[in-house]
Length: 119
Image (cartoon, rainbow, N blue to C red; front, side):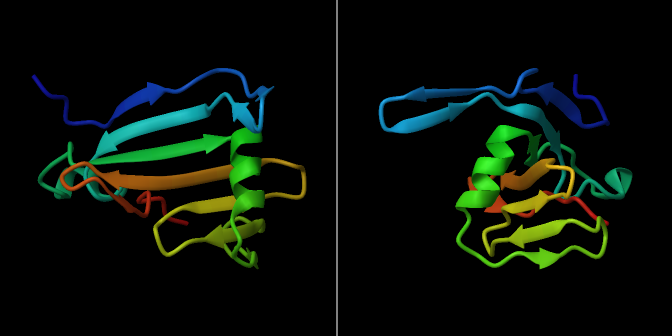
């Protein structure tokens, strides 16, 4: 039986970095939400199991933010710096050092989308 609310999955508790060979490995700190295309108006979407919305923060988010080769802009919603890729990957950087990234995955065709996060 399916629940009418998004199913949240905790990815990990700690944000630590492990260096192995020529790459850096990060533990993810965040959640994966299974829902419809948007995290707004969940009851009006008709389906709640087509998209996975990934939201993570910490060192992994900082590594992705720093690695995105697109210009940062001021985010009017949060006051932080935002990098938003056409693929739907979005990362934020804040003055206090916090980093957060999010993106969506349309599970019907395995394409990246925006995470359905709004201001």
